[in-house]
Length: 427
Image (cartoon, rainbow, N blue to C red; front, side, top):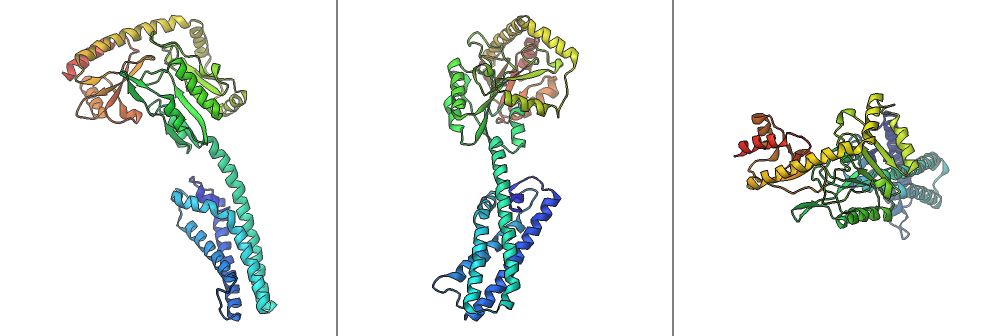
């Protein structure tokens, strides 16, 4: 059982830690008893350590295996865990060590009988060896059971092919904090636009991938895939039985150059769609959002987990959100008109200041991700801009994407005034 302790990087419970050290002590006692018995037998046999059938060699291998195991446990730190190579080595030991120990015990008994060792000499050591053999064997079996459960749990959270490296941080940070392995689908620039190629996503899929996270319209690039690419992403997930979590907070804010994508849960049986009032409606103050899915078993688990976080929403916000949903066009159309006007204004701003940044025009949403052509970092410039003008620019460092990009938002009515201040500042 103690093997599982240093395979788990989390801090171990004191009782489990105590049991771990107890098992180490049992291993060491086992080593001492086997060693004494081996020396007694070898002495009577003229210290012929390598007879033709290599019996003592097998015993020696068993003893060395126990010593190495305990040494590795001693040097590992149970809070942070040992290096990965030690974990890999130790994960293979419980599979063969108990059998090897039992085999060594039988070899010792056989040798004791062969050399005529008096029963009074080896009775106690043999009894201790036998008892400890059972203990170590049971420990190995317990470990295998624990590790089997842990492996199954790890499979559920082992690998997530995250739709974008730079996106709303919670979409990947929660997975990271849970210990998941997160693979990032990196974008490319094509035809002066950000692009995400489904073929690149397919290369990220591993045998233990359990979840794909998507975010369309994407924050911060403002990218949405074509309907064909959208269904290709779904096809990749369906072939492997992978769940897709779709962040659709900017849904319906698609520009004339692209059609509105259907909600993922409508077109994929293992899809989960997230939507809310903050972006599409501009009603962030309501603090309301929702998940939808055809997977009723998964939704039931989510509902059960939510009980640990909150009981219910505030009633006034629910009423206002219902009114907004029933009057969708009254919110979406003015917002789209405002976004289009701001993008047109920003395009002209870019034409006058192309020396300062590259502008990749979005095809959806209310944000864009520009590349700065400056000698300082985006964070440094944003800090200086905020101090000198009280205007905020969100640098790419906040999205963990280099130091030369920045997000632009098109959701505010006063963007032309802000651009005028920025233009005066950079010139």
